[in-house]
Figure 1 (cartoon, rainbow, N blue to C red):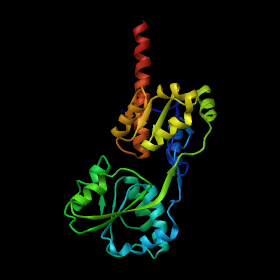
Figure 2 (cartoon, helix red, strand yellow):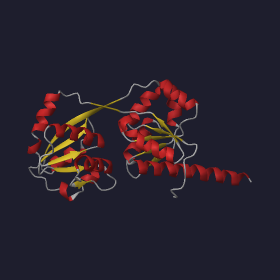
Figure 3 (spheres, rainbow, N blue to C red):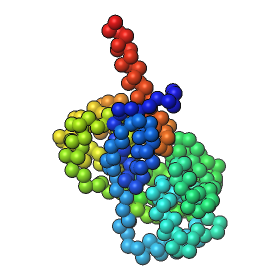
Figure 4 (cartoon, rainbow, N blue to C red):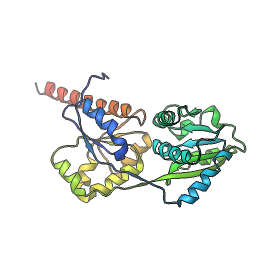
Length: 274
């Protein structure tokens, strides 16, 4: 697929949290598309008392490894860790996505010792050689509220002692369904990007009954096959494209692939009419 395919005239809904959406929106605009910003996740401070979180971070020197689930986990955790005196010497760090690894490197000036290989998910991280022999290792997982249990469950089965440290929480933004209705009626949205299951469910909630039929008929770009399966279960019926990973460049690549398919189908249709 040629990277010269542009997105002229294509409206792309970007559902990343507001503080993380701009790089993708800028790439869409650079490619000629029109981003429509509709954050379906809001990142807020954790609900746990600050002194309780502080006490947990005071014990960070007792851990052998810290795992960061997402860029939000990296950003919030490092901010808190710096206030507590910085990263303890000897603490190994692991990340799942390349975005998390890159952010950790920028914030600390050092790369994580362990990174998940493609497709950059928990399953891939668990294949790393450094995640195998973990008997009596103390591991802390920085994340938001809730989430999958696969990683901690598997690490415990390999002998590790695992604690969660929830440094942020996700919430559904307050957005009136009329916002989406106006965008739909004005033809501003041709395809939607989705990066998390919670964001997908929040989008359906924000859409409300008025927009739901249209929403389920709109193509999606997703970051993994689990999301595609969830979208199907939720009621989405239109084409779903799975990006190679959760990065902005991979999302743009998937959108371009969809745009190419639309161009090819239109050309075929014209030829058939002759």
